[in-house]
Length: 485
Image (cartoon, rainbow, N blue to C red; front, side):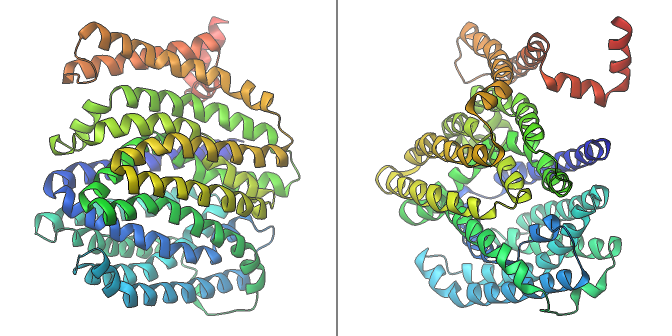
């Protein structure tokens, strides 16, 4: 547990640095480029994400969860990954004239050519980081990711200022990935992994078959609103929705993303030792929601000042959308945990069946909402699709772990109280100020302070398990607690 906790702290620290870098990039780029320019890049990246999901048929998760891993397994993973990457790159370049015509953006042809080159660099990096994650070498991973992110940030801003418009994103990705891959090879100089081999490809493809299908369904659904908005409304609408999701997912990035890099290796290690995954899963749900839920509720309350600070005045239309999406995302608390626990138990087929149900149904609902209702309808639709996905996802996990709804409720009720305690005081302050959601900078700071105080009070009153984890992180606090007892 100590090694997992140390790895978790490293990973969360890394994610905070990456989030800060991403924050700086988004804040400055949103002021340099127009929503229309950013919208074109959003459409291009959404198309790329769907195409890139094909590479999940050679998923790096196979390397992490395998009980025994040989050199032949790793070399086969590299070979299959590069073959799939070549197919994806060729398809993107070949289809780029049609895509550019479809979206009436001729420069998308050059955009996809640069991105295609990025895919090969990124493929090398993904294999290296997968091996490092299996070894729980999260310090090295943090160094690689931070170097790539900082380089990407500097390149994006510099290129945007130089007039590269939405091409700034593609060139910056190539530069950042190159730096990260170079550092990865320096820290993990296993050059033998690049020797082609197809000796043990069947096991990987067997795992990757389901995983790839899941990735295609997920990423297609994830990109669908951006692609539909870009085609049927405007690139501007796609950019607005993209920024809505980005701000709405800040709590997820702060709370869950850092932990998830550790969870799959940790769960896989527990499963290899034959241990019960039910207690750590419930514990993880409790700890995550004590941070995730309060952050989302407070973000919904402070959406207007948050958008103003992060993106600037030209993005004010995003604020009411953020309020809707933040509430919808309250139901996503288990999403990031479900995948690693199911993979660790060898239940990748269950994940595929679930994806085959939830994403087509959710996609049809989303298509209808956007075609007939536009941007606002896309946000409101998430209040239906996310709870639906959450219910089915938890149903599959419950069956595998032997959980009851009472077990889940018992793990979550304290977090619900903490979340409400965090939001009550900011809402009361709004009522007193009379300015509604349009708070001044000073009022926003005060509301955030009230939220933090309510969160701390909620942890103490409910005796939430997160409080013990916080005390373990700070030995001095733990000694004070023992002395007081």
